[in-house]
Length: 485
Image (cartoon, rainbow, N blue to C red; front, top):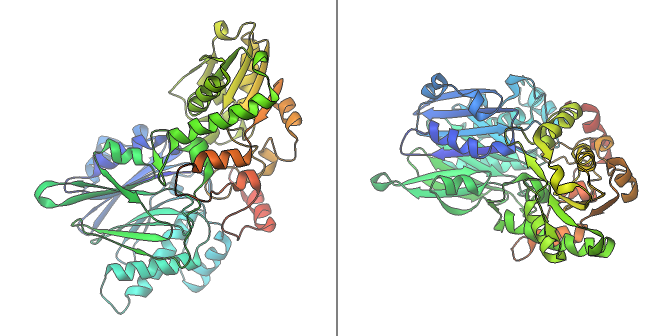
């Protein structure tokens, strides 16, 4: 999971990209980068840390031009501590290309061999984004060898990239002296949305971003989601063209975006994240009613913030009092995306504090959006007991996470997943809860897609069914052995 944005403006773009990345900060806090294009000159600044920490006045002054892109990183491939693996990535031929990417490629071994041996391109890092920009560069060079630059050449290159690359990728690239390119994998696993706003006599300004909240905050009109397999090219003058570049595209977005990753005020693939989370609460309430009679529960409490909509609906539907028992320190990063188990454990205590007045002597039902490693859940149950709770029923608005996620979320190792190989009572014992209730897979699916045109979701971490069809047990073993720490 990362956050990406690209903007074609009639004025200086550096501050606009910075502001957009600040809105996408929840999607990654390991590192960040901005690149701009001034005529044919590319400028770039990137560093470890969050947006507000990474860029200084001198950096912003160097980011000249009216076309730009940016990235906030949550490391799922490569090393989070190596600044050189921060995005964007740059190649100087053809033209000069800078690219940012959200997702994970699943045929990195094959692509590395092809790029080194056949394409004769040098790789400096283990980042799959460096692989992606080099594949794009190689195919664009082949498409324009005997012809002048044109959008059709770009679309031909993306079509060939789709044939070579497997996995999930939403990508944005600057092509020096020409404009901005955005494209999405043939399954549309990771999100990307297009927006437009009028700029008076100079025409239109454009934005592509991971989430719609960037468009709304910037005063852009939502045009549409970038289609699976589609490529969009916007010239430096603001002319936009697009083409479907995949042979058999089908929309299968990641279910975890709606459960946890995206901000609730975003709309993805025509689905309101907030409304999806309300529906998740409605369906979870029905399951809770089967296994935990309402008379046994005194209060319903969310783990702030992403589980709040579901908890509100659980309380409303079960007729149980809703209370806020945990106070959140908003200056600590999201514990799920902190690298390393020790950092996540420490982060929970720094981030949340239980208020004894809300727990003492009560039978508490806690609603969380999901349970991944169990670290957060275990610490929260301990906090509730230490605050005086009589009993703790823990519930998850998502089903048990039993399988690795290989499409852009840091869940590569089954040994770290608390639900892998365990029955629900065993998981309850692991996290210390009196009772544990999960959302059903079918209920999660129905809650997310209800009322939309989406007919399939990637639910691989819940079901073990990988939508690209190319993820094998051997590949999963290799990922576990080579995961970043």
